[in-house]
Length: 122
Length: 234
Length: 112
Image (cartoon, rainbow over all chains, first blue to last red; front, side, top):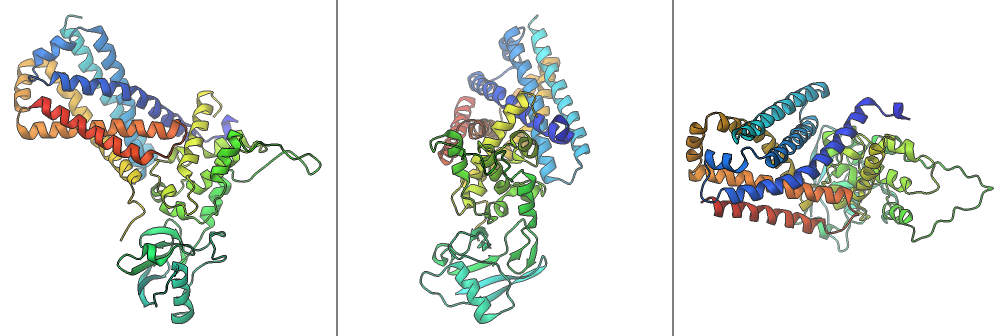
């Protein structure tokens, strides 16, 4: 049975499902993110304020870690769909480009999460 | 009334005609008037004239419509009509398009019923209130006119996408308790050229003359594919 | 001339695609700024001061609205795809738009 479905179709289906699962995670994370922004922005932002809020907190580090993974998967999969529908790029080139994009996103994201965690002495 | 009608094939132009405005006039009446009284070389397709056969669909003032049951009074913007062949399909001549790709996709989506009973078996007993029966009911009145297909931007961007009508047909069969092709059909309609390519733009349901919702059918297929994928059956 | 695209569900699709595209492009800059914030705290405060300008605040509000639009539009899509089909999708489009603007306004009020 499994051999009937072309490899490309199988990958498409997996990516589609990952897109939905990460969407559910992001739906929760973005609500928390928006609430945090609106609360934190009152009285102005400073580097010290941000560090005192999230620095060294394992809870925040884990939250943002999950956030980065979900966004790092969700954004490239979404961009891939747009590129495939609206540009003449080949499927192979699109996939390569999006793997690179996702890697950069997650790399930057994890570096930021880790740096904030370590700044609080965690 | 001023009417512009597409003349030619893929390359062509709009030609203006003057058609008398009548009460209770349909767009198909207008096209027929042009063909009978003004230019007999105009090609177009129709059959039943009462909204059953699905052969007279055209693009009327930018939107795909069945022309036999579309009143001029409903669609004539500023008293003028622009009539073009259906979009997303190759134009043969004037208002006639090649529907082969459209119907080939029904076959590709596993649109053929296949049971395992013979004429010697009893009828399958299915309660009208049965959930699957109701799902099938919701999609089964499709007349195959191609309006949804012409209005779908996913088809426009990805010509291999199966399209709303074929997927709607697949969904009615997924819900047919007598059908034996369930797992095979899910393989056919998964993937980005199948139900997962749909972005719920809902132009199909917006324009379906039978007021069906292919988007809802496709959502049903997406759920079925998700369950199969999570259980490792895809 | 009308088009097959002129209806609310299609506009919702366009907003979802555009907001998603802008957010995806913005995300690498967002992350790299955060990395800089931890490495050069003094410089980052300078950047935060720069971001107090009205035009920058307006751009930030735009991003917040886009994020809210993508969030609410995405939840709408999940509902369409995974819940039993209902005929209130057009209401849902309006609710998503309204909610997103409200969140943007809330940010703007708190930011200035």
